[in-house]
Length: 102
Image (cartoon, rainbow, N blue to C red; front, side):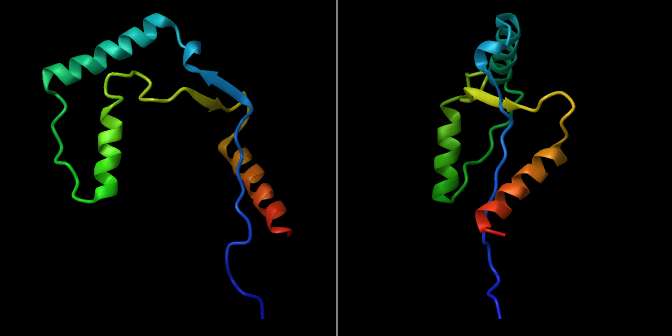
């Protein structure tokens, strides 16, 4: 009888990388203006801070990026033209199977 469990975990990331420099400066400036306007106008309601220490630490870390239009992201992966999310899922599944030796 074989044990049941996780034998392999797979991943897939598209090869194309888009850094923050890819975005036109005027677009980034508009994002920053909108974000700042929400902070100043009070449209964004203050949410109560969570009681759980881990959640509180996460919320505090996120607050450090409140004025960053990219919210701390430096790059993101971009699917090539014609690729579907299911294509990425298949690639990750194949990677998981290979890592599991199946």
